[in-house]
Image (cartoon, rainbow, N blue to C red):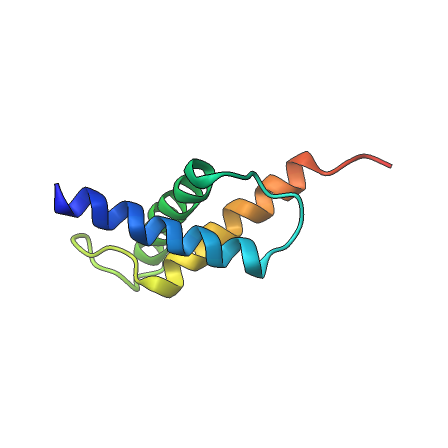
Length: 84
């Protein structure tokens, strides 16, 4: 139970920081911020394992989680930008 609460808290913090770094029309709300942070952490873990930075039983650290969240927000902006 404590692990799930910890994942939500870290996901929220990562999501907030990613939203501050990458301004624009981001999906809003507490749930969206937490999901972006958690998904960014998963993406950061897989990217870190792919480049050999993490082993099979390791998860992403703070910076890789933030990088993953920024990639997700960048993709969101790419697909939802208004066409001129």
